[in-house]
Image (cartoon, rainbow over all chains, first blue to last red; front, side, top):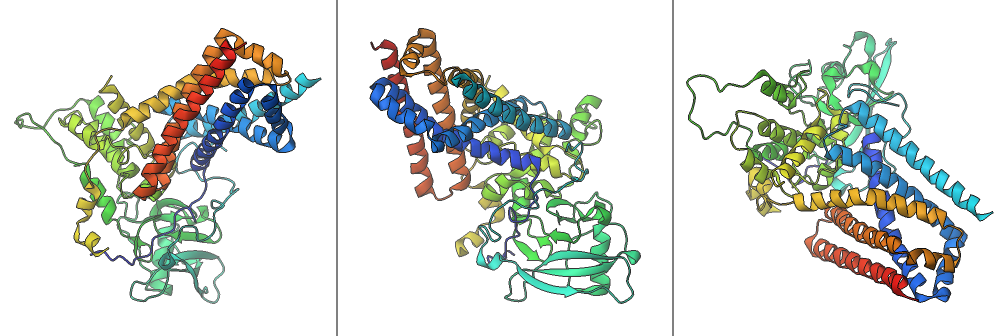
Length: 129
Length: 284
Length: 129
């Protein structure tokens, strides 16, 4: 006896965010962010192939404030998706499913991706002078 | 903050819920309204508030949250004891499933303070103030804290959870080595066969929320693995054929809310990864 | 809606039966992921090293044969991984077939087109003057 008019119990509206679900959704968001950056990378290559005029137009945008903010976001997305992706590959091989390991590897992925993002930006700015 | 086992409670709460609008993707009939407050009796000293999801199918009204003030001095230690006390002494219309009161039957599974657990094994002192009690997530609600599990049971039937053999029936038992038995029961008693089908894991799986009509979910997939791993079962290939589907199995993206929330300490995430490995292995 | 009630829960769960396939997509996602671990690290490191280079230096760098090869491999692995990943995201959240199926087709064709564009641009730089 099933009725069609039964209310549905709440899910994402009330479920507690935990490291498991939060890192998973960040992995998805960073993947989407990288997917938006990938055409930009192709544009960069085409601009480089097209000549100095096309290239400097793109370079100008990337060096602007907006461009730098987007690049920072893209860099973090790359490093987080990479670190968490490696974590996923271990799971696919069957390793790392004990809760303690899930949590330690999760925090490690966050820490390493932030460290890599900061390091890469500091080095990049250091190369200027 | 490192969690070592699923019964460990988080020390801090940075975010109580995901930053989505309050009624994000909620149909008009599921929208929750504010309900009554039932104050504690006079003279009660140790008062705790419980905010409980209520829904009455006999009326046309929407679900609501009722707040009960419970005197803990005259209440047992577990959340289920509080629910029983509310039903006995404060509001007899409060409806919930329960049976063994010791964490082995799986009846009283519900969402307590945002995560799924058994009410009979959750200490009241381990809940927030106020404690928030909802039914298992993303399921049609029959009444109050009683969700309709029909679809979940149908998904369980889909994996044919019984022994399938071709070889002739032996004189006595079908024998199994202790190691093979451990693969099912777990050397620590937390193997796939120890599942009590409380569905805390499936109700907490975001993939099952969005694709539950076709994705089987962690509880059913854990049981599917239980039969795949059983040395006495002879239909492994057929079972894997039945599971290898972009929706039935591969909606699992290793979110791992399931392993985090299992009130019996089982590991559905690991079992699902083992199923995926078996599918790769059979074509390599 | 009434017709839905006339079917049993079990029948609705059966749907059209198991597709008996799905591991191909899952496996290729993992293979491209494994390829992308070293390739994206190499790309990120190269970007940092070339952060302040001018247009001419960039062209010289892309001219080198081993760089051309790595760039082409990166583009292929990246866009394949991206197409598979985005397909899964769409399948998760879009349930109306008449929107989902064309979107997935566009994702695959788009990624293929972008990959070809990137590869051709790279080769033009490599073989150009």
